[in-house]
Length: 154
Image (cartoon, rainbow, N blue to C red; front, side, top):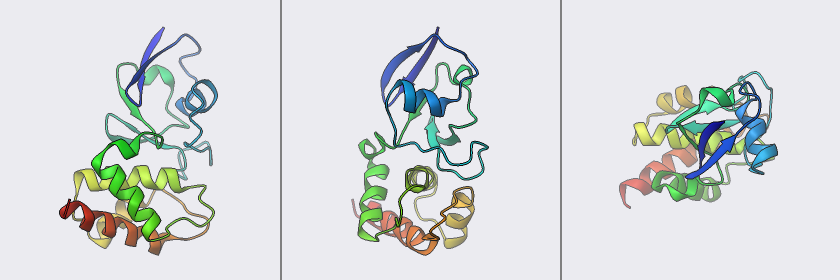
């Protein structure tokens, strides 16, 4: 049995330790906010946090996360930075189709948690692993700056 903490709740998994975290989240726990994009950790749609750091759930085996804390888009609003990023996403109308946005938000939260006042270059670097087919990159960057400003005044 593998002990997994997801969004603050403990779960026990008795299946194949090589099962990707993405499928456990979606199929076993019903947390469908984390999306399948490419299955090769190239697009970022499946980004979650492992102990606060962004990780690609499509290539992370369940067996590699025992004892670690997983946070998904469903719980990111419970963090001050997460709530600010989600509010800025709405304010700046960052999503178009929205498919990649949960991964984008998770990467943005990780960035602002470690670098509360990022430059455009910092944002581009941190977000480079998240692909948006609708190309809303300018709105995403604006939303990250908006969240950064909001957090300064919170």
